Image (cartoon, rainbow, N blue to C red; front, side):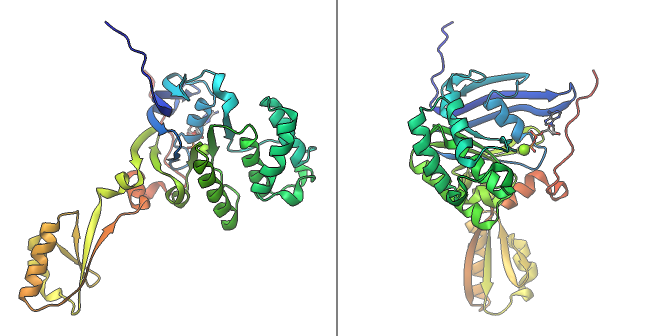
Length: 321
Ligand SMILES: Nc1ncnc2c1ncn2[C@@H]1O[C@H](COP(=O)(O)OP(=O)(O)O)[C@@H](O)[C@H]1O
Ligand SMILES: [Mg+2]
């Protein structure tokens, strides 16, 4: 049999990633994820879904039980590409006695960035994350939000091709969040690949090209935002006079009455047309027909369920054999 090494053009191509902690907590149960080069990819899921574990595996910081695939064309677990990857961990631990500038210099040196480049980049990066006034302040004086900003700058000090950010806007106020989004789109414009972990839907929705929804260690959905949301759609028909008198007939045709509107679930325009014919034949005038695309939140809630809330579902514990 001929074995052809699969040439993959994905920036990240993860196949069957499994990780169990302490022999019983199944954090990842066979995760497949593909991230295209130059895109912003969002890994979305409630707390405990396994997001941080997955990115730590990508960064070779956690050893998986089983995993195949590649990161920047190298087999998963190979450290060769670390030099062109940037990582913002869930919680950064910076030496408290260093200033922001010294911190970036230190991390830049670790990433083998030449001294001259480190100096240039750290000043421009600290500006880009809004810390220009605090470059010479010791990190021990920094607030949580400032530490997050410094973490972002640290993740970029080696001018990485692939940037992996674990909950990048954690601890930031709405303005800080917006600044981070602007920074991410700027990185995409520069051709970088960005991988973001987030439990915040709106963040991901506003900036990501593609998304995977992770739940209890498994990918429930993956695709572009429109792929994830197109299958669920409804039409809302508004009439100038409420059509509640036609309830039975509307329901027979496949619609329903909801807060004064006629709602047709799904994307069947035929049903919509039949209901319009019915309305017209009874002299109702139609004010509007609006297709409604479900938001990512609707899809998320459908998968995770309301019950999980922001706390997430309990971890999957392996049964004793
Ligand atoms: N070092 C660890 N030891 C034991 N269990 C862990 C460890 N890290 C994470 N877990 C567990 O693995 C599951 C996934 O955690 P994590 O990857 O941090 O999820 P997320 O980032 O989506 O919140 C959770 O049940 C968590 O408690
Ligand atoms: Mg996490």
